[in-house]
Length: 278
Image (tube, rainbow, N blue to C red):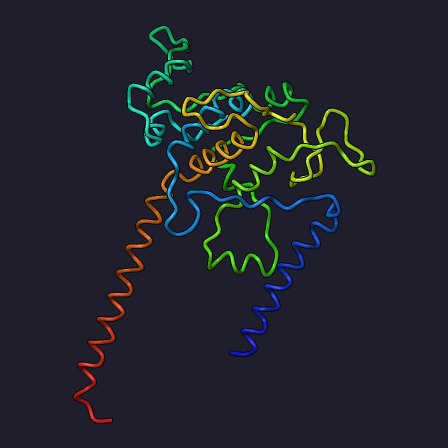
């Protein structure tokens, strides 16, 4: 048993050192770890802030949707953000989707309906790359779960007990607010922009997408880069895990059931074995 525990600890340490070595092999001197933020959906009892999700959708629609798709999210899903069905229908009608073939065998365009998925900004990957200096913008449907900086040992061990699952939103927020002038000892490729939070290097092809007062909020929230970044990060977390609240609620009920079941088993065991001489 001691040997097994020793082996597991060794593997954990190797994993942590491997993560550190990965950064050391790159530009760890300039790389910055994502800034941890406070999210309403964090922790075992966290819930989405519907107002924040609505603002995040607004930022996505007015800024991000020009380049990034959201192909796994249907318009009907936006009803879960607190919108009425008529409001979502009106939003869907602003977009056109290709349908068909018709009776003549031709494809045609029509206004989107609730059952349609959010339309792509480009017809294919090649067109997306051509319009963006050779780098095709990634789809945003699962970006908040797919993009997260690996936290080395012993941090990721503590994350298991704290139920830390906000690595993606933390990273997106940090990336959106992390553009800055490159240090004198860092050479940035022409056509890219320095950002020490970018996981794949120190610069990326996407120009700073946000600026103060770029998107108008109806609820009086600050119209700043910081607020926009938080809101769109929360929205993308919802897009990646829309059933998060249901999952947490079910998990809590299961834990309560297991505790009660364990107590019943213990009492049953005492009742049965109390009649047996030891």
